[in-house]
Length: 482
Image 1 (cartoon, rainbow, N blue to C red):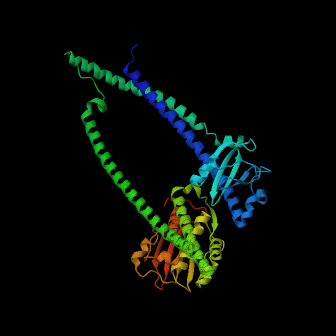
Image 2: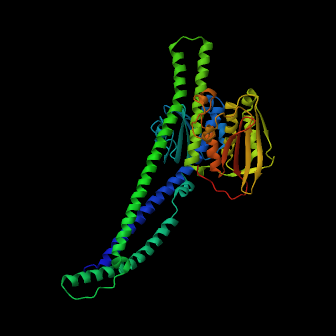
Image 3: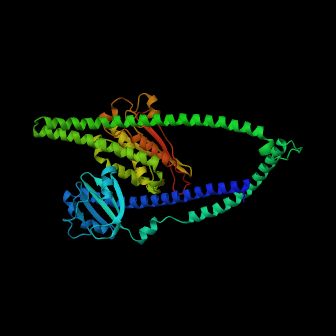
């Protein structure tokens, strides 16, 4: 039996809808499992970092005996330390691991070697148990945490089927709607076909009562389509321009990063080449090693700050919010920078109430005050006073002033650019005084992330005054993406 146009249209749309639904289900389940796996890997990453800090706090010998650490971690975890060559140095699940085969070809180790970290799900060749392995490379060792791939983990990684049921219901509703719409459209096509046939055979027939939105308004529809086409072209041109601008920004950022990395790397190479190519007395050699170490510290600070900025912009959901006592936070900054402050004869005064809390991420808020103080230490001079004042609140935000009586910035054209990444008031300023050149950019991004604002101005008495706001506890919070 020959199918009608309505039937063909209904079947075609149903097939398209079915393919779309199946593709959405497959992609959704894949993404859900991926997100859950990443969440689990992030948890294992925390255990890896705990292990790394434990090792770094002691000597290298701690690598061979991590038993004292086991009481701090879940009892079901398997902890393995592997040399860069693949030799197992420690494994809490095995009594004798000296004869274990080389692990350099394990999938998670291969991935960690290539990307810094890696994971895999498989049965252990050592004890036959199935694990979710997570490995991370630190200098010359791999730290690997294995979580038993038990029923709990399998259930955790299993996609939620509620979305599948929702799509099935939506698919059935869509079929009904498509059949109804195709039926109405098919009637119009049939009228058009009959009318065309009548005209072709010179049969007198009245003009059918075509729906105005399909037949009678053809001309208007063409005009509308043309207008939409021009609007689409304009929109496409704007998007193309924005894309080119984004590419330019990325190129500038890449150039800035390469420029900033080149200085410490060149310094390190120069000092080490001097040591290797020349016979130096021990004091001179030690001096060059220390200078190379200082450059390495600068490099690590730069990488750390770039990572924090990237995390704020690309993974804001990873920052947890809670009530944070600002007075305790400021005291922690003062304690951490005690030696640098004393060396420059800098005193910090704070009028923040002892029990005043704000709502935010503690690490980001710490970075705000830490980088503001670092900026004073690096650029304001010596015998400086820093004043941190609580200026007021409006029920949503609390307002603060961070000021110093240092040298300030003579040319105020630089003030609006202080928060730009790698911006220097004068050439070479960052290299002479240390720092990554990203401190104030981190301050701006962290405050913006919390929904606040920050401005800077010169003080008449000398120095700079930063005015900024932070969300109060229990105030409606709208996290902003910098």
